[in-house]
Length: 206
Image (cartoon, rainbow, N blue to C red):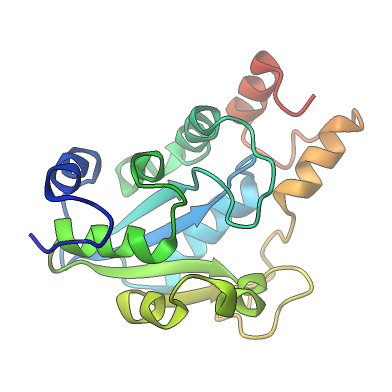
């Protein structure tokens, strides 16, 4: 097991329980994000990447805290929403609550190093919206991130340049969903019905 800076060997070994075993050739799509909340656009992006890339599995990884300080509902609520939002992928997708187990602040480069250390042979594909391209230089060790994972860029509204996928995906954002919900407007066509039920039951975004 390789070492990861900032994480001792015992803590690293403890993380192993929370990471699925590799499948096939270890080609794992990594869909990270705040998922605040997850919406149909996230699910359709995952499906589109599955259809255009040779992936053996998809790992959905909610962020514990936002790198640029955005307010988020509790992590456990977002993890539960992700389980509901991606349940239609059956065994093809796994939701990892790994980030809350990593040292804060949690950086993408640290996450990738942990995955490489605990799953030797992993061939990660980081799925990113085209809007992150302008912020990528601000990430911690952006060159190392791109060495440790191949980036597949999907289109986001207003940032279509650089996107690999050329189809018209739903370009809504979680901000759109939250705003509409707080305005009392119908969002049932934007998110999974079970996610909406959880939001209402838990009083999220109200």
